[in-house]
Amino acid sequence: MQIQVHADSSVKAGQHVAGAAEAAVEGAVQRWARRIPRVEVHLSDVNRHKGGADDKRCVMEARLGGLEPVAVTHTAATLMDAIDGAAAKLHKSLQSTLGRLSDR
Image 1 (tube, rainbow, N blue to C red):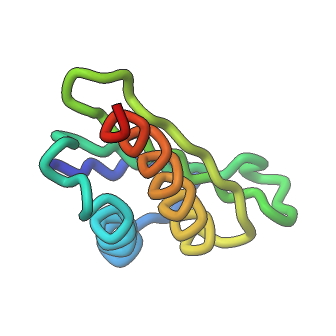
Image 2 (image 1 turned 45 degrees about the horizontal axis):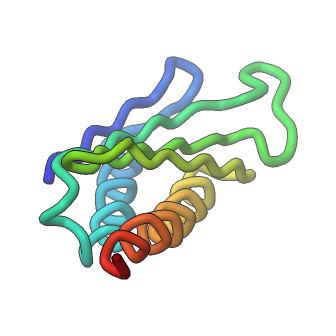
């Protein structure tokens, strides 16, 4: 599984943040890793120069082999909280999507 982390110019996302995003994705999707060839993580600051609460956004998009991609978004006060929240949502969404397929 390939994990790509992208950050826009308004976010200071070094190796530490990228590593945390990769670890969060791996933890969230490890159960279905064989069915997911790629996960893209997009980090951004919603308000950019204005600041404010809950202005860091993390979007995670899991590309599923033979199925439509699953995308989730979480906004929080810090990048790490946004990453953790998006990873939890991704896990729940994949559990729902892939669980229905296995029930058939």
